Amino acid sequence: MAQQLPAEVDAAVERWMTALEARHLRDLTFQEVSGALRALSSCYVERRGRLAAGAALEGRGKRAAFALFYAPIHRLIASHVVGALALRLNDGTAIVDVGCGTGAAGAAWALGAGAPVRIMGIERSRWAAAEAAWSWRTLGIRGHVVHADARAARPPRGPHAWLAAFVANELTGDVRDHLLQTLLAGARAGRAVLVLEPLAKAAAPWWDSWVEAFGRVGGEPRQWRIAARLPDLVARLDRAAGLDHRELTARSIHVAAPV
Image (cartoon, rainbow, N blue to C red):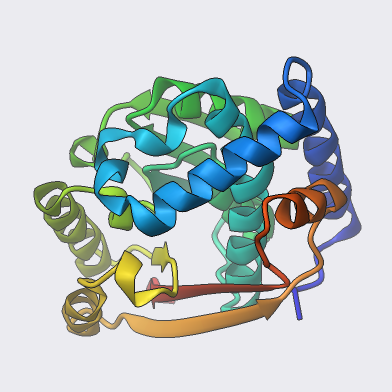
C-alpha cells in the first residue's frame, strides 16, 4: 500500500491537485484533456522514438494531460519509493532533479525527506520548467529550474542528492550515457542517487547495463508494484482514456549516501 504521509503533506498535495485542476481545465474541457491523454499514452507506448524530440508535450492538450495525469502518478510512485526506502535528507540539502519535468517526483522526495530541503531542476522544455517552478511554489518547496538538457547538470556547492525520474527513457543514447556518468560520479562522491523508470522492459532496454554500472558503486535495484488510491480527477481521466492504473509500477536504482 502507499506510504502514509504527515497530515500537512497530505494537505499540501490536496491544495496542489485542486490548483492543478483549476489551472489546466480553465480553457480546456475534461473531454478534450481525456482525448489528449489517449494520444499521449499512445506516444509513450507506440511512438517512443519521438519522445526525444519532445513529442509528449506537443500542444496544450497533451501538456494539460501530462500535468493532470502523469505528474500526479509520478508523485505517487516517487512518494511511495521515498517512504519505503526511507530516503531522508539533511536540512538544507539540494535535490538535483535532472529532467525534472513538471517537478512531481522531485516534490515527492522533498516532501518526504524529513527536513527542509530545496530542489534544483534541470529541464529542456520551457513549459515543463515553468510548470515545475509553479508546482514547487504551490507545494511550499524552495526550488528553481535551469532551462537546459541533461548534459548541463552540474553538482551545486554544499550537500546535495541526485534524482533522475522517468527521464532517461526519453533521452537519445548519447545524452543518456552522459547522464549515467554524471550520476555515477555523484555516487562515487558520496551523494545519494535515486533513478526511477517505467517497469516496462520496452521503455528501458538499457536498464540492465545501468544496474550493472550502479552495482559497482553500491546501487541497489528494485521493482515496484503499488496499490495506490488515485486522486479523483486522475481516476476519472484514467477511465475516460481507457487506461488502468489501479496498480502503479516502476523500477528504481538507489545509492545511499554514507552515514
